[in-house]
Structures are given as C-alpha cells and as structure tokens.
Length: 369
Image (tube, rainbow, N blue to C red):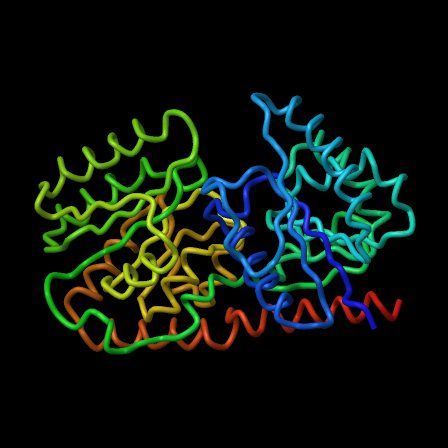
C-alpha cells in the first residue's frame, strides 16, 4: 500500500518560530519516519534558505502586500496541489484557509481539514465571511483548546470538531534535572516574538512594580524579530527594563534556536507571560517542559494551558503577579511545588507523542469516513 500523502498549507515560513510552525514540524518529522505517511509542507520561502527537515518542503515567494500575497498564494497553491496530488490537505493557518477557498472547486475529490490555532472571536467579520463556506465543506475542524472548540460549537454549525493541544519542538521532549538552575539570584524570564499580542509594553511596568516591592531579581529576556521596526521596539523594551533595575540585572538575547531556548528555560526560576492575546501559549508549555514555574495573563487559551487559576493574574491589577513573584523568590518550597506542578502538567498533556498520536487518530478516522 502506498504512503498517504498529506499536504500542509501555510502562509508563513515553516522555520519562522511560532506555535503553528513548531507543532507542524513535530507531526511532520514523526510522519516522515512512518512508512504509512508522506508529509509535505507548502509555505513561503524559508528564512534560512534551506530545508533541513526529514520531510519535504515546497516553497513559494511572498509579496509586498496582503493582496499581492493572496494572489501569489492562490496561484502557488493551485499549481502545487496539482503537482503533488495529495490524499489529504491539512490547512494550518487562517490566510491559507481563505486562499484555499478560491480554488477548492478544482479539487473536489481531495478531503481537507483545518486547524484553528486562534479563537473563534479573534477573526474579523470579513475573515469569517470568507472562512465559513470553506469550513462547511471541510471534513473536520481541529482546535487547539477545548475552549475554542466550545466557541465554534456555540456559534457555528461547523462539524465535526476535534481538539488537539499544540505541542513544542522535539528538543524539549527530554528533561535533564542536572541542567536546572539550583541557586543564584532569583531569575524571571520573558520570551517571544515582537508583536502586539505579547504586550511587551507591560513588561517594564511589571518589572518596576517588582523592584518597588523590594524584590531582588534578574530579568532574562529573549526576543525574536521578523518585521520592520521590531529592532526599535526591542531597544525601547530593553531601555525600560534597565531604567528600572539597572543594566547589570538584565540578560538579553536575540533569535535563539530551539535548542538554545531549551537551555534558556533551564536557567529560570519563573517564566512570566504578559500577553494581551494568546490562542494557546507555546512559550508557557516550553517553560513547563524545563521545570519552570509559570504565571500568565488569563487571556485566550492560556488558562486552559496553565490549568490552575492561582497562577493566572490580571494586568488591570498586577498585585497578584507581584505577590506570586515575591512568594517564589522567598519560599523555596513554594517554588519547588509550582515547578513540579508545571513539569507534570507538560508530561500529561503536551508532549510530542500525544500530539502525533492524536493526528494519526484523526487521519485514520478520515480514511474510514
């Protein structure tokens, strides 16, 4: 029996750090080692210029504007799907879903599914107008949280809906206790891509509140940049932190690889997320996997990922975040208990094995339907 070819459609490069990319890499790397499957990723030209994955990557160029990108994708998707003749199309990003809507009539005999990595209410009305007809004709909608699945069930007639929690890169799979930070000054980590959803402006506000509360700590900050103007925002953020606690208390890094990020989390006592929107919370899961304590804002899918409201805070009243930081800095047992909770939560919910097995289950289900 020939391998089942699955085509994954994306509008961002697979090697751009992000939850969708890392989760797609995880499943495609695993499927590439399974003779029953042939995964192929379709995405814009790679940032690093060369594919080093176990699976094939077929690329297309990107334009200067959203409209131009849409037109490029329409042509590229149509050409590539014809050439590849897949058994199943798995659409991984919203713009790719909209794009596929313009050409799906050309591929009526190919089943397709969509993974919604956002939230139902996060789409503009215009986007939903284009998305709904494509979703109604799909074989399945996959969401990354139970909360988002419930939103789709309450507000749409799209069925069936399955939940598959995101996972993270394979370098996070194996935990090494000897790498964990054992002593030294209390260290708080912030990490992510420069974008409005992460609300980096709040980080200096929280840092100043912690400093004024008398906490002695260091900040370990990792940023990733992709768009014009990101470097200026990063510089402003660094200045805001330094103005609060001094340059010697800030460790700053840029564009770390996944392996380097794995080592980074080992060096933290506490990882803090300040997002104003987070459909899932990839960075929180990465930190969990390295045995970090984690606190986060109660937005999007973060409460479901964190799993316990006592680690959720509100930026409207940052006092809870300050209190948790002081607790973990001053009480080693409280810190240890939080770290053990999060490591266990990662192992029980978000490992690559769980993610990959759930995909194989739904692919098999689609084969039978």
